[in-house]
Length: 339
Image 1 (cartoon, rainbow, N blue to C red):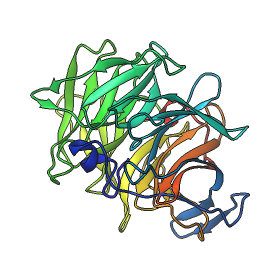
Image 2: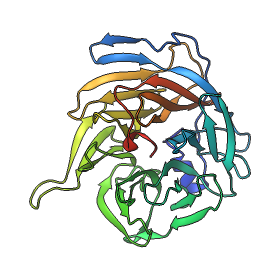
Image 3: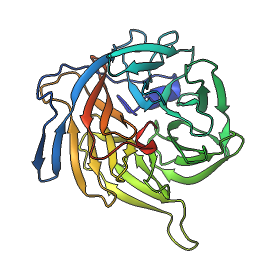
Image 4: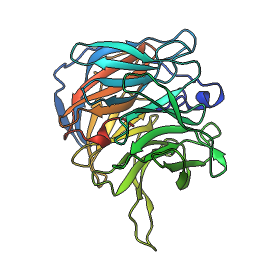
């Protein structure tokens, strides 16, 4: 997620906030009909509900990290929520209601995901270089990982879990200065060992396993590209390569999700839309909010219902933070449920 500037990055790095905007009015086809164009079809998302308003204390709101728990509740984080205001919210998408489940005095949380190992909700604190975890009901906050990784503190953005519960984190180091110092970091599930898998990256942002857990897709915000890291690469082969170059114009590559067919859902910072690619880089579709919607500037992330195709996209701008829905191209799996 990134904003005004980019995900709450630059700002989060300094004080813990940044500059963005958000809001929206839905006018258009609520059925989400798709039209076909030269670059794949266009799928119109429709509004579910407004979750947040711009905070007086920070001048913005930025929703991120949508993820479902085992009971079908959707959790989201508000990156720029000030101390005392809801930083993690639980949403009942059927009833269109939400409630706060966690707040604190310092965290700037940019992603959320449930661990397959211990069932807790893990959050990345971008501003403080930490990963924290909560009980599923939002209680019992614990610091899972803090400190330097191979001599440098992280700016952790998104998370992907492997089947064993180890964490793979996109580290956006170097973003405020525009330097290629980003990394992909692996943290053992006990939080005791962290290893850099790739470095020299340009504001590493979204991260997700492919459908077979053989490698990681990750986006580089300031290069508008999606790269692929082979985790099972043979000795002497290139483990990392640029997979997709995103023609975003003024928009930049934010978070990534992957569905059961291996399709990539690339969120955009600076445009309330997502682009869907297949695993070979073919552009399949663009997910957009209605054309006349005002005040929405970024679509940061998406969660697809596990075992279903109903997708929920977090969208923010000057008018607030919203949840939009659309029909995904394939069923949701762990790789399309948070990050």
